[in-house]
Length: 115
Length: 112
Image (cartoon, rainbow over all chains, first blue to last red; front, side):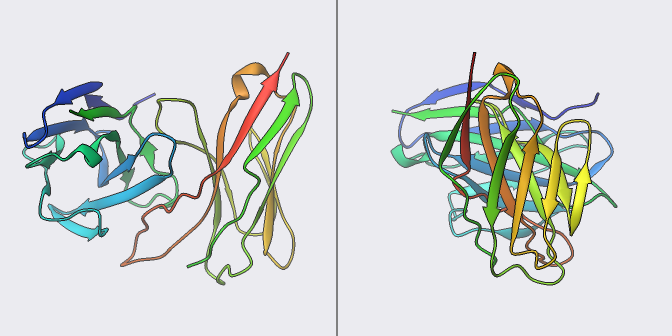
């Protein structure tokens, strides 16, 4: 069964550094999402992406965040200058065209630790 | 936005049926109800979705009464591997497709 993959599984960085989290969505999917989950808290929506542009973003997704689909397979989340509070699990999700929009397929996540 | 309320935690034993109820009093006419499962350090996984009455798949059943103000996820004969957090979500429409809005979920612990 095809699945969403994410790399790295764990990223440790220093405060103020830039990080790029990578996702490979399922190949025929057209909608892409990033969510985050701070340890012990809810899964929170960050951004959705369709047709090479952001469709919606939450208030968490400020100017420090950006997303990109640099080629036909990867979908990346960049944090320009990480803060301690950015430490969380980051999940990528994708969805094919025509599917129920609740049945998003999530990746295994990247654990980001900001020191 | 239709807010959901579900128990924080539940305990069960292997082989038992588990029913997790979710309240969504402000559900809108076009909203669907969806349940996700999340294991520790993994992404959420879709379990089941419904609009009204009963839906069943190979994993679970979803019961939705006529007023749709609540729903019940039923897991038959749970095993240890069903220990996870279960989220009840109500669809939120936005520009033709939807972001998912998760609550705090129900932490199910299945014991031997």
